[in-house]
Length: 275
Ligand SMILES: [Fe+2]
Image (cartoon, rainbow, N blue to C red; front, side, top):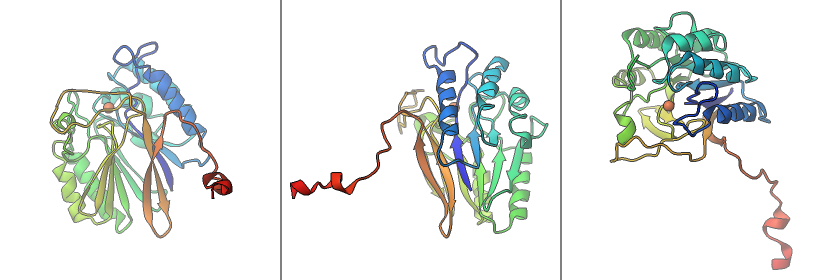
């Protein structure tokens, strides 16, 4: 299993920029090109929410057109910037596992040696997240069915506070319900989120809980300052690979332009004429 996880694309309507100056649509098109050009090709691309910025049909038009150029199966879930109905209408054809009910989007992927469970934590009109009773009972049933098979949950909002003054206020408010499932089910060993526009990881019992950067704009981490800052530090995504005898290995993959790769040459590294 080899997966690319991207997040928080925040597409805007055709010709519109994010915050009037960030050309998210062009940057996201470039991300799609980069992923398509990967030498080692992922089995699928995962997008952990905030597909668009304002939940508008015109934004989803751009998102669908751009994302339909990705040459991989797509597993997508919504974030707080998404509109459930618009999201399902435009992303459903790209990710049929989303089903047909915009109020209860969740699905399992059983194609690999690790189970992947996708849930929706968005709440209409709210920035914070929430796990509905329906989602929690679906998750519980899935974890019971899955037995010992290692399992990863993908959700937009992190299930706990991560010490960021800006983002903690809008984490998943009842994420403790997910933590209770981590306690009950040793198979649940990873939780991958978006929302914070930053690579952050922590651990709860056996589960590593991670949030990942956005595809275009990022959010600086301040422990004390709750002001809603954003920046344009280099974008990145996370790659997840199941490695024999090790398990899931996840690593950062930059989405910005940079020189290289260069092939290591021992003769250049320590030239003999310097000895
Ligand atoms: Fe976001």
